[in-house]
Length: 246
Length: 246
DNA sequence: TCTGGTAAAGTGGTCAGGCCAATTCCGTCG
DNA sequence: CGACGGAATTGGCCTGACCACTTTACCAGA
Image 1: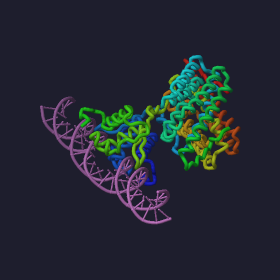
Image 2 (image 1 turned 180 degrees about the vertical axis):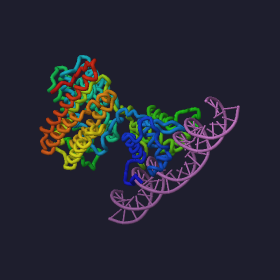
Image 3 (image 1 turned 90 degrees about the horizontal axis):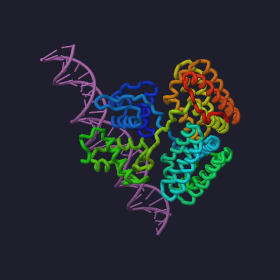
Image 4 (image 1 turned 30 degrees about the vertical axis):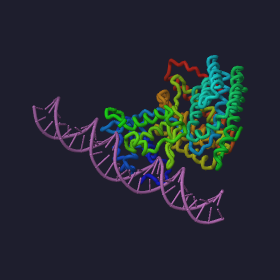
């Protein structure tokens, strides 16, 4: 009975993690076959449907390949542990704080290193944001694009990757509930103005100003978020560790 | 009978595609609830387990969110950029440079915020590294663990996520070739010494020293990497943008 | 009337057992 | 020795059931 009742995560996830761990540990090597579903079920003390669900999760995750009538095989190609995610209990402010730090440096580096083409790409993203600020989901996409292009202009693709990863966290279930609070037209207007300041600092090749402008943008974003946050979550007790400014 | 026998793909994939299509077509909007599993099963002419498998596939794909006792909800967020990866042409130095910046701050924050338990966890990782420095794949795992725990001790889970993401990039094809160059026992000894300095600064709650120690560790890592890099790649032309110091 | 709690309905989570279809394995026959 | 064919293995899918959690509706009490 390796599985606890208290475990709140759904069973198929526990099983999938367990199997994935065995694979990582080298228990089952790439190309080798996993035990039959029935055996796994018995071995783990769960039912076959649960094992099947776990295997499907692993399959869409690319960990294993299922061949009918033959068995389940380990693919071995672990294409970068499919996008780690933020823990459930972490508030959005930690995320914004991380972006404050990282994107501030990105802006500074971009001011130093950006090519003309990259500057143009950044301006285009900003223009698109201005143009689509009425439409519902669009400004957010363009907002993302703007920040991504600045990160790319830093000349460090690892930083660009990080910015992308952090931005993608907004797709998590936690943030979905909040995003529609942002649709107030006035708020987009403010965000655009802050963006413009960042762009101007980059054009002037002034790293310090670019960093300051980006950090200010993040501070304002935190404030805007804060309003809808406390509004939609009354039992709030965010620890805010690492959230405080510096 | 909407489903054909000739269809060779597995049933849960067909169902998942069908539901995803309905979502894309706007049949079910973001945030709205899907019909109950039982209804979907009847409506599509399949059994509930098959519907469940499809929903799990959609869930790990990020299309929907399942809330027990309540229902299945559309997240509305499509692509799930599933683990962005570093571009092929980016050298390892960009990655190290990004870590220089981010993990330096993590160390500083950890020196400020770490709990006793977190400090202990960091020390344990270091001890494990000392203990396993002979074994082949182990020190790298413990190295990863060490850096991860410092990031966690920063109190900002978004930063921890970033560190994890960057570290996972080492699994990419580019880096696998190089890692075995690190197996020289003397190099691990140096790395451990650098780690120890970071730990001591954290224990002393000295953020500045912690940041400096971590950055020095990264600089040294870059140097070590540099040796095996130029050695295994003669046609070198790394642009090194963003790699230069600061 | 309003408020509070409790019962009931709704919904996902999991299990058991079964049958079918594809694949694989192995012994037999040519 | 090789080709054939049947049995065993294994995944695919189904029926039906029971449980736990959430949401809703209703009724008693203030």
